[in-house]
Image (tube, rainbow, N blue to C red; front, side, top):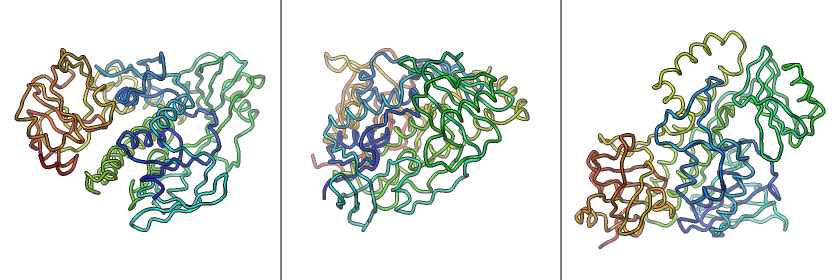
Length: 491
Protein backbone atom coordinates (compact mmCIF):
# COMPACT_ATOMS: atom_id res chain seq x y z
CA UNK A 1 0.00 0.00 0.00
CA UNK A 2 1.22 3.48 -0.86
CA UNK A 3 -1.09 4.95 1.78
CA UNK A 4 -4.03 3.86 3.88
CA UNK A 5 -6.25 6.43 2.14
CA UNK A 6 -5.98 8.30 -1.15
CA UNK A 7 -8.02 11.49 -1.42
CA UNK A 8 -8.68 12.93 -4.89
CA UNK A 9 -9.07 16.71 -4.88
CA UNK A 10 -7.38 19.44 -2.82
CA UNK A 11 -10.38 21.71 -2.34
CA UNK A 12 -12.00 22.39 1.03
CA UNK A 13 -13.51 18.89 1.29
CA UNK A 14 -10.30 17.07 0.39
CA UNK A 15 -8.02 19.16 2.58
CA UNK A 16 -10.38 18.92 5.55
CA UNK A 17 -10.60 15.15 5.16
CA UNK A 18 -6.83 14.85 4.92
CA UNK A 19 -6.37 16.82 8.14
CA UNK A 20 -8.97 14.73 9.95
CA UNK A 21 -7.30 11.50 8.80
CA UNK A 22 -3.88 12.70 9.92
CA UNK A 23 -5.28 13.55 13.36
CA UNK A 24 -6.36 9.90 13.46
CA UNK A 25 -2.80 8.85 12.62
CA UNK A 26 -3.71 7.60 9.13
CA UNK A 27 -1.30 7.91 6.18
CA UNK A 28 -2.98 9.88 3.40
CA UNK A 29 -2.05 10.97 -0.11
CA UNK A 30 -4.00 13.84 -1.72
CA UNK A 31 -3.97 13.88 -5.53
CA UNK A 32 -4.79 17.22 -7.16
CA UNK A 33 -5.05 17.66 -10.93
CA UNK A 34 -4.06 21.36 -10.91
CA UNK A 35 -0.35 22.14 -10.51
CA UNK A 36 -1.10 25.02 -8.14
CA UNK A 37 -4.01 26.77 -6.46
CA UNK A 38 -5.90 29.04 -8.84
CA UNK A 39 -6.54 31.78 -6.28
CA UNK A 40 -10.15 31.87 -7.45
CA UNK A 41 -12.94 31.87 -4.88
CA UNK A 42 -16.42 30.66 -5.67
CA UNK A 43 -17.29 30.58 -1.98
CA UNK A 44 -17.18 33.52 0.41
CA UNK A 45 -17.05 33.20 4.17
CA UNK A 46 -18.38 30.27 6.14
CA UNK A 47 -21.43 29.54 8.24
CA UNK A 48 -21.74 29.43 12.02
CA UNK A 49 -21.52 25.63 11.94
CA UNK A 50 -18.23 25.72 10.00
CA UNK A 51 -16.92 28.34 12.43
CA UNK A 52 -17.59 25.80 15.18
CA UNK A 53 -15.85 23.04 13.20
CA UNK A 54 -12.74 25.17 12.69
CA UNK A 55 -12.79 26.21 16.34
CA UNK A 56 -13.01 22.61 17.59
CA UNK A 57 -9.85 21.74 15.64
CA UNK A 58 -7.96 24.88 16.64
CA UNK A 59 -7.92 26.18 13.06
CA UNK A 60 -9.98 29.35 13.58
CA UNK A 61 -7.09 31.52 14.92
CA UNK A 62 -5.29 31.02 11.60
CA UNK A 63 -7.86 33.32 9.99
CA UNK A 64 -7.05 36.25 12.30
CA UNK A 65 -9.78 38.79 12.95
CA UNK A 66 -12.72 37.48 10.96
CA UNK A 67 -15.48 39.89 10.01
CA UNK A 68 -18.75 38.34 11.14
CA UNK A 69 -22.40 39.17 10.71
CA UNK A 70 -25.79 37.94 11.86
CA UNK A 71 -27.48 39.18 8.71
CA UNK A 72 -28.56 36.58 6.20
CA UNK A 73 -31.44 35.67 3.93
CA UNK A 74 -33.57 32.86 2.61
CA UNK A 75 -34.24 33.25 -1.09
CA UNK A 76 -33.69 37.00 -0.83
CA UNK A 77 -35.93 37.44 2.22
CA UNK A 78 -33.78 38.99 4.99
CA UNK A 79 -33.32 36.99 8.21
CA UNK A 80 -31.59 38.04 11.42
CA UNK A 81 -29.52 35.02 12.47
CA UNK A 82 -29.15 36.49 15.98
CA UNK A 83 -32.34 34.56 16.81
CA UNK A 84 -30.07 31.47 17.12
CA UNK A 85 -29.08 31.89 20.75
CA UNK A 86 -25.58 30.76 21.61
CA UNK A 87 -24.45 30.25 18.00
CA UNK A 88 -21.30 31.79 16.58
CA UNK A 89 -21.79 34.46 13.94
CA UNK A 90 -21.02 33.59 10.34
CA UNK A 91 -17.82 34.79 8.64
CA UNK A 92 -18.84 36.94 5.69
CA UNK A 93 -15.89 38.08 3.57
CA UNK A 94 -13.25 35.33 3.77
CA UNK A 95 -12.54 34.23 0.16
CA UNK A 96 -12.53 30.50 -0.46
CA UNK A 97 -8.91 30.80 -1.63
CA UNK A 98 -7.92 31.99 1.86
CA UNK A 99 -9.87 29.15 3.48
CA UNK A 100 -8.14 26.64 1.21
CA UNK A 101 -4.73 28.13 2.01
CA UNK A 102 -5.25 27.71 5.76
CA UNK A 103 -6.69 24.21 5.36
CA UNK A 104 -3.73 23.18 3.20
CA UNK A 105 -1.21 24.54 5.70
CA UNK A 106 -3.03 22.69 8.48
CA UNK A 107 -3.29 19.38 6.61
CA UNK A 108 0.28 19.43 5.27
CA UNK A 109 1.56 20.50 8.68
CA UNK A 110 -0.01 17.35 10.09
CA UNK A 111 1.87 15.22 7.56
CA UNK A 112 -0.42 15.00 4.52
CA UNK A 113 1.34 13.97 1.29
CA UNK A 114 -0.12 16.51 -1.17
CA UNK A 115 0.74 15.81 -4.81
CA UNK A 116 -0.25 18.54 -7.24
CA UNK A 117 -0.31 18.08 -10.99
CA UNK A 118 -1.58 14.51 -10.66
CA UNK A 119 -4.60 13.54 -12.75
CA UNK A 120 -6.57 10.37 -12.02
CA UNK A 121 -7.01 8.20 -15.13
CA UNK A 122 -8.67 5.04 -13.79
CA UNK A 123 -9.78 3.39 -10.54
CA UNK A 124 -10.02 -0.29 -9.64
CA UNK A 125 -11.65 -1.43 -6.39
CA UNK A 126 -10.91 -5.16 -6.10
CA UNK A 127 -12.47 -5.59 -2.67
CA UNK A 128 -9.15 -5.75 -0.83
CA UNK A 129 -8.00 -2.26 -1.77
CA UNK A 130 -8.20 0.42 -4.45
CA UNK A 131 -5.68 0.90 -7.27
CA UNK A 132 -5.49 4.31 -8.93
CA UNK A 133 -3.71 5.02 -12.20
CA UNK A 134 -2.39 8.57 -12.18
CA UNK A 135 -0.64 10.81 -14.69
CA UNK A 136 1.78 13.18 -12.99
CA UNK A 137 4.91 15.22 -13.71
CA UNK A 138 6.97 12.01 -13.94
CA UNK A 139 4.52 10.12 -16.15
CA UNK A 140 1.94 7.46 -15.34
CA UNK A 141 2.01 5.36 -12.20
CA UNK A 142 -0.37 3.20 -10.20
CA UNK A 143 -0.95 3.89 -6.51
CA UNK A 144 -2.74 1.61 -4.09
CA UNK A 145 -4.61 2.30 -0.86
CA UNK A 146 -7.11 0.62 1.43
CA UNK A 147 -9.71 3.31 0.65
CA UNK A 148 -10.18 6.12 -1.85
CA UNK A 149 -12.32 9.23 -1.36
CA UNK A 150 -13.45 11.45 -4.22
CA UNK A 151 -13.43 15.11 -3.22
CA UNK A 152 -12.97 16.29 -6.79
CA UNK A 153 -16.00 18.49 -7.27
CA UNK A 154 -19.20 18.55 -9.25
CA UNK A 155 -17.61 16.99 -12.35
CA UNK A 156 -15.97 14.29 -10.24
CA UNK A 157 -13.73 11.86 -12.10
CA UNK A 158 -14.01 9.45 -9.18
CA UNK A 159 -17.82 9.48 -9.24
CA UNK A 160 -17.90 8.78 -12.98
CA UNK A 161 -15.15 6.16 -12.96
CA UNK A 162 -16.75 4.10 -10.20
CA UNK A 163 -20.27 4.48 -11.61
CA UNK A 164 -22.12 6.21 -8.79
CA UNK A 165 -25.71 7.06 -9.72
CA UNK A 166 -26.17 10.85 -9.78
CA UNK A 167 -29.86 11.60 -10.36
CA UNK A 168 -31.44 15.03 -10.32
CA UNK A 169 -32.29 17.91 -12.62
CA UNK A 170 -30.14 19.60 -15.25
CA UNK A 171 -29.46 23.33 -15.22
CA UNK A 172 -32.24 25.52 -16.60
CA UNK A 173 -30.38 28.84 -16.57
CA UNK A 174 -26.90 30.32 -16.55
CA UNK A 175 -25.57 32.90 -14.10
CA UNK A 176 -22.37 34.95 -14.16
CA UNK A 177 -19.90 35.67 -11.38
CA UNK A 178 -17.16 38.28 -11.72
CA UNK A 179 -14.60 39.81 -9.37
CA UNK A 180 -13.82 43.36 -10.49
CA UNK A 181 -11.38 46.16 -9.73
CA UNK A 182 -11.67 49.85 -10.52
CA UNK A 183 -15.40 50.15 -9.98
CA UNK A 184 -17.68 51.48 -7.25
CA UNK A 185 -21.10 49.84 -7.06
CA UNK A 186 -23.70 50.12 -4.36
CA UNK A 187 -23.69 47.01 -2.16
CA UNK A 188 -26.45 44.50 -2.76
CA UNK A 189 -25.30 41.92 -0.20
CA UNK A 190 -28.33 39.64 -0.32
CA UNK A 191 -29.18 40.47 -3.91
CA UNK A 192 -31.75 42.64 -5.62
CA UNK A 193 -34.62 41.30 -7.70
CA UNK A 194 -35.15 43.31 -10.89
CA UNK A 195 -37.73 43.00 -13.68
CA UNK A 196 -35.34 40.94 -15.82
CA UNK A 197 -33.56 38.93 -13.15
CA UNK A 198 -31.36 39.35 -10.07
CA UNK A 199 -28.04 41.02 -9.30
CA UNK A 200 -25.81 40.82 -6.24
CA UNK A 201 -22.86 43.03 -5.22
CA UNK A 202 -20.45 42.60 -2.32
CA UNK A 203 -17.01 44.00 -1.38
CA UNK A 204 -14.00 41.69 -1.11
CA UNK A 205 -10.58 42.40 0.41
CA UNK A 206 -8.03 44.28 -1.69
CA UNK A 207 -10.44 46.69 -3.36
CA UNK A 208 -12.22 43.92 -5.27
CA UNK A 209 -15.97 43.94 -5.88
CA UNK A 210 -17.85 40.73 -6.53
CA UNK A 211 -20.95 40.74 -8.71
CA UNK A 212 -23.40 37.97 -9.55
CA UNK A 213 -25.75 38.37 -12.51
CA UNK A 214 -28.78 36.23 -13.18
CA UNK A 215 -30.76 37.18 -16.26
CA UNK A 216 -33.99 35.24 -16.65
CA UNK A 217 -34.49 33.41 -19.91
CA UNK A 218 -30.78 32.70 -20.48
CA UNK A 219 -30.39 28.97 -21.15
CA UNK A 220 -27.19 27.27 -19.98
CA UNK A 221 -24.33 27.28 -22.48
CA UNK A 222 -21.93 24.42 -23.20
CA UNK A 223 -18.71 26.29 -22.52
CA UNK A 224 -15.11 25.09 -22.71
CA UNK A 225 -13.85 28.12 -20.76
CA UNK A 226 -15.06 31.11 -18.77
CA UNK A 227 -17.32 33.70 -20.43
CA UNK A 228 -15.84 36.93 -21.73
CA UNK A 229 -16.27 39.86 -19.34
CA UNK A 230 -18.09 41.84 -22.02
CA UNK A 231 -20.82 39.19 -21.96
CA UNK A 232 -21.20 39.78 -18.21
CA UNK A 233 -21.17 43.55 -18.63
CA UNK A 234 -23.85 43.38 -21.31
CA UNK A 235 -26.12 41.32 -19.07
CA UNK A 236 -25.51 43.74 -16.19
CA UNK A 237 -26.49 46.70 -18.36
CA UNK A 238 -29.66 44.99 -19.57
CA UNK A 239 -30.73 44.36 -15.97
CA UNK A 240 -29.58 47.56 -14.21
CA UNK A 241 -29.08 50.10 -16.98
CA UNK A 242 -25.50 50.73 -15.73
CA UNK A 243 -22.33 50.32 -17.78
CA UNK A 244 -19.56 48.41 -15.97
CA UNK A 245 -17.50 47.56 -19.04
CA UNK A 246 -14.67 49.88 -17.90
CA UNK A 247 -13.99 47.71 -14.82
CA UNK A 248 -10.93 45.44 -14.66
CA UNK A 249 -12.01 41.79 -14.38
CA UNK A 250 -9.94 39.76 -11.91
CA UNK A 251 -11.90 36.57 -12.44
CA UNK A 252 -14.99 35.67 -14.46
CA UNK A 253 -17.01 32.48 -14.22
CA UNK A 254 -20.45 31.06 -14.89
CA UNK A 255 -22.63 28.55 -13.09
CA UNK A 256 -26.10 27.05 -13.29
CA UNK A 257 -28.87 25.69 -11.12
CA UNK A 258 -28.38 21.97 -11.71
CA UNK A 259 -29.43 19.90 -8.69
CA UNK A 260 -28.11 16.36 -8.25
CA UNK A 261 -27.16 13.97 -5.45
CA UNK A 262 -25.58 10.52 -5.56
CA UNK A 263 -27.78 7.69 -4.32
CA UNK A 264 -24.98 6.34 -2.12
CA UNK A 265 -22.02 8.10 -0.53
CA UNK A 266 -20.08 4.84 -0.32
CA UNK A 267 -19.58 2.07 -2.85
CA UNK A 268 -17.24 -0.60 -1.51
CA UNK A 269 -13.91 0.99 -0.70
CA UNK A 270 -14.66 4.22 -2.58
CA UNK A 271 -16.47 7.12 -0.92
CA UNK A 272 -17.51 10.61 -2.01
CA UNK A 273 -17.46 13.88 -0.09
CA UNK A 274 -18.52 17.42 -0.92
CA UNK A 275 -19.54 18.52 -4.42
CA UNK A 276 -18.59 15.07 -5.75
CA UNK A 277 -21.70 13.83 -3.93
CA UNK A 278 -24.08 16.79 -4.40
CA UNK A 279 -24.41 19.85 -6.62
CA UNK A 280 -26.95 22.65 -6.27
CA UNK A 281 -27.59 26.34 -6.72
CA UNK A 282 -25.10 28.19 -4.46
CA UNK A 283 -27.86 29.85 -2.44
CA UNK A 284 -26.75 31.15 0.95
CA UNK A 285 -23.17 29.98 0.46
CA UNK A 286 -23.95 26.50 1.77
CA UNK A 287 -21.93 24.39 -0.68
CA UNK A 288 -18.41 24.72 0.72
CA UNK A 289 -19.70 24.50 4.28
CA UNK A 290 -21.62 21.30 3.67
CA UNK A 291 -18.57 19.84 1.94
CA UNK A 292 -16.31 20.60 4.90
CA UNK A 293 -18.84 19.07 7.28
CA UNK A 294 -19.14 15.95 5.08
CA UNK A 295 -15.42 15.43 5.54
CA UNK A 296 -15.48 16.05 9.29
CA UNK A 297 -18.21 13.40 9.59
CA UNK A 298 -16.25 10.94 7.46
CA UNK A 299 -12.71 11.54 8.67
CA UNK A 300 -12.87 10.07 12.17
CA UNK A 301 -15.00 7.14 11.01
CA UNK A 302 -12.64 6.21 8.19
CA UNK A 303 -9.70 6.65 10.54
CA UNK A 304 -11.33 4.35 13.10
CA UNK A 305 -11.88 1.61 10.50
CA UNK A 306 -8.34 1.92 9.12
CA UNK A 307 -6.91 1.77 12.65
CA UNK A 308 -8.86 -1.41 13.28
CA UNK A 309 -10.91 -0.47 16.33
CA UNK A 310 -14.20 0.12 14.53
CA UNK A 311 -16.20 -2.25 12.33
CA UNK A 312 -16.78 -1.56 8.62
CA UNK A 313 -20.40 -0.78 9.48
CA UNK A 314 -19.35 2.52 11.03
CA UNK A 315 -18.68 3.77 7.50
CA UNK A 316 -22.31 3.09 6.61
CA UNK A 317 -23.35 5.78 9.10
CA UNK A 318 -21.48 8.29 6.92
CA UNK A 319 -24.01 7.69 4.16
CA UNK A 320 -27.06 7.53 6.45
CA UNK A 321 -26.14 10.76 8.24
CA UNK A 322 -24.80 12.89 5.43
CA UNK A 323 -27.07 11.78 2.58
CA UNK A 324 -30.03 13.07 4.60
CA UNK A 325 -28.22 16.38 5.15
CA UNK A 326 -27.45 16.66 1.43
CA UNK A 327 -31.04 15.88 0.48
CA UNK A 328 -32.27 18.68 2.72
CA UNK A 329 -29.63 21.02 1.31
CA UNK A 330 -30.91 20.40 -2.22
CA UNK A 331 -34.46 21.01 -1.07
CA UNK A 332 -33.73 24.38 0.50
CA UNK A 333 -31.51 25.63 -2.33
CA UNK A 334 -34.18 24.76 -4.89
CA UNK A 335 -36.75 26.60 -2.81
CA UNK A 336 -34.48 29.63 -2.56
CA UNK A 337 -33.88 29.56 -6.30
CA UNK A 338 -37.60 29.64 -7.00
CA UNK A 339 -38.06 32.57 -4.61
CA UNK A 340 -35.06 34.55 -5.75
CA UNK A 341 -34.72 33.88 -9.46
CA UNK A 342 -38.33 33.56 -10.65
CA UNK A 343 -40.32 36.40 -12.14
CA UNK A 344 -43.10 38.61 -10.74
CA UNK A 345 -45.45 35.61 -10.56
CA UNK A 346 -43.62 34.56 -7.36
CA UNK A 347 -43.83 37.98 -5.68
CA UNK A 348 -46.93 37.05 -3.63
CA UNK A 349 -44.99 34.11 -2.20
CA UNK A 350 -42.06 36.39 -1.34
CA UNK A 351 -44.46 38.77 0.39
CA UNK A 352 -46.02 35.98 2.46
CA UNK A 353 -42.61 34.63 3.50
CA UNK A 354 -41.56 38.17 4.39
CA UNK A 355 -44.48 38.32 6.82
CA UNK A 356 -43.79 34.87 8.24
CA UNK A 357 -40.14 35.57 9.12
CA UNK A 358 -41.36 38.24 11.52
CA UNK A 359 -42.30 35.30 13.76
CA UNK A 360 -39.24 34.19 15.75
CA UNK A 361 -39.95 30.48 15.36
CA UNK A 362 -40.01 30.82 11.57
CA UNK A 363 -36.79 32.85 11.54
CA UNK A 364 -35.10 30.28 13.80
CA UNK A 365 -36.21 27.43 11.58
CA UNK A 366 -34.93 29.00 8.35
CA UNK A 367 -31.72 30.35 9.91
CA UNK A 368 -30.89 26.96 11.41
CA UNK A 369 -31.59 25.28 8.06
CA UNK A 370 -29.27 27.56 6.09
CA UNK A 371 -26.49 27.60 8.71
CA UNK A 372 -26.51 23.84 9.33
CA UNK A 373 -27.35 24.30 13.00
CA UNK A 374 -30.50 22.18 12.71
CA UNK A 375 -28.63 18.95 11.94
CA UNK A 376 -29.52 16.02 14.21
CA UNK A 377 -28.18 12.49 13.77
CA UNK A 378 -29.80 9.26 14.90
CA UNK A 379 -27.65 8.13 17.84
CA UNK A 380 -30.37 6.18 19.64
CA UNK A 381 -33.54 7.08 21.44
CA UNK A 382 -33.84 9.13 24.59
CA UNK A 383 -35.27 12.30 26.07
CA UNK A 384 -32.10 14.40 26.34
CA UNK A 385 -32.41 17.34 23.99
CA UNK A 386 -28.76 17.16 22.86
CA UNK A 387 -28.81 13.56 21.64
CA UNK A 388 -27.57 13.58 18.04
CA UNK A 389 -26.94 17.32 18.09
CA UNK A 390 -23.69 19.24 18.34
CA UNK A 391 -22.22 19.76 21.77
CA UNK A 392 -22.56 23.46 22.60
CA UNK A 393 -19.57 25.52 23.63
CA UNK A 394 -19.15 25.16 27.39
CA UNK A 395 -16.40 26.63 29.54
CA UNK A 396 -14.88 23.95 31.78
CA UNK A 397 -12.51 23.62 34.71
CA UNK A 398 -10.45 20.43 34.67
CA UNK A 399 -8.40 20.23 37.86
CA UNK A 400 -6.75 23.63 38.00
CA UNK A 401 -6.92 24.14 34.24
CA UNK A 402 -9.47 26.22 32.38
CA UNK A 403 -10.57 24.81 29.04
CA UNK A 404 -13.71 24.37 26.94
CA UNK A 405 -15.69 21.67 25.19
CA UNK A 406 -14.29 22.76 21.82
CA UNK A 407 -10.69 22.77 23.03
CA UNK A 408 -11.08 19.19 24.23
CA UNK A 409 -11.98 18.23 20.64
CA UNK A 410 -8.76 19.58 19.10
CA UNK A 411 -7.16 16.08 18.87
CA UNK A 412 -10.29 14.68 17.10
CA UNK A 413 -10.83 11.97 19.72
CA UNK A 414 -14.01 11.03 21.51
CA UNK A 415 -14.63 12.84 24.81
CA UNK A 416 -16.57 11.58 27.83
CA UNK A 417 -17.34 14.51 30.13
CA UNK A 418 -18.03 13.51 33.73
CA UNK A 419 -19.66 16.44 35.51
CA UNK A 420 -20.18 14.66 38.87
CA UNK A 421 -16.76 13.08 39.53
CA UNK A 422 -18.37 9.66 39.13
CA UNK A 423 -15.72 6.94 39.61
CA UNK A 424 -18.13 4.18 38.53
CA UNK A 425 -18.89 5.98 35.27
CA UNK A 426 -15.18 6.37 34.52
CA UNK A 427 -14.53 2.71 35.32
CA UNK A 428 -17.25 1.61 32.87
CA UNK A 429 -15.57 3.66 30.13
CA UNK A 430 -11.98 2.63 30.92
CA UNK A 431 -11.87 0.02 28.14
CA UNK A 432 -12.14 2.79 25.53
CA UNK A 433 -9.50 5.10 27.03
CA UNK A 434 -7.19 4.52 24.05
CA UNK A 435 -9.65 6.36 21.77
CA UNK A 436 -11.90 8.34 24.15
CA UNK A 437 -10.63 11.00 26.55
CA UNK A 438 -12.36 10.57 29.92
CA UNK A 439 -12.49 14.00 31.54
CA UNK A 440 -13.82 14.98 34.96
CA UNK A 441 -14.82 18.62 34.61
CA UNK A 442 -16.75 21.36 36.35
CA UNK A 443 -18.84 23.32 33.84
CA UNK A 444 -19.19 27.06 33.99
CA UNK A 445 -22.55 28.78 34.04
CA UNK A 446 -24.99 26.90 31.82
CA UNK A 447 -27.63 28.87 29.94
CA UNK A 448 -31.09 27.44 29.40
CA UNK A 449 -30.28 27.23 25.68
CA UNK A 450 -27.27 24.98 26.30
CA UNK A 451 -29.42 21.92 26.96
CA UNK A 452 -26.98 20.81 29.67
CA UNK A 453 -28.74 21.82 32.86
CA UNK A 454 -29.19 18.76 35.04
CA UNK A 455 -26.79 16.69 32.89
CA UNK A 456 -24.36 14.47 34.81
CA UNK A 457 -22.29 13.17 31.88
CA UNK A 458 -22.08 13.45 28.10
CA UNK A 459 -20.27 11.42 25.41
CA UNK A 460 -19.08 13.47 22.42
CA UNK A 461 -18.02 11.98 19.09
CA UNK A 462 -14.83 13.33 17.46
CA UNK A 463 -16.97 15.40 15.06
CA UNK A 464 -18.54 17.22 18.01
CA UNK A 465 -21.94 15.50 18.08
CA UNK A 466 -23.43 14.12 21.29
CA UNK A 467 -23.70 10.31 21.18
CA UNK A 468 -24.95 9.72 24.74
CA UNK A 469 -26.01 11.80 27.74
CA UNK A 470 -27.14 11.12 31.28
CA UNK A 471 -29.79 11.29 32.34
CA UNK A 472 -31.88 10.97 29.19
CA UNK A 473 -30.34 8.35 26.89
CA UNK A 474 -32.10 5.01 26.53
CA UNK A 475 -28.78 3.31 25.73
CA UNK A 476 -26.39 2.65 28.59
CA UNK A 477 -22.87 4.04 28.34
CA UNK A 478 -21.01 0.86 27.26
CA UNK A 479 -23.60 0.27 24.52
CA UNK A 480 -23.09 3.81 23.18
CA UNK A 481 -19.31 3.52 23.43
CA UNK A 482 -19.29 0.24 21.53
CA UNK A 483 -21.59 1.55 18.83
CA UNK A 484 -19.37 4.51 17.99
CA UNK A 485 -15.93 3.42 19.21
CA UNK A 486 -15.83 -0.35 18.72
CA UNK A 487 -15.03 -3.13 21.14
CA UNK A 488 -13.27 -2.16 24.40
CA UNK A 489 -9.76 -3.16 25.30
CA UNK A 490 -9.40 -5.65 28.12
CA UNK A 491 -8.73 -3.71 31.34
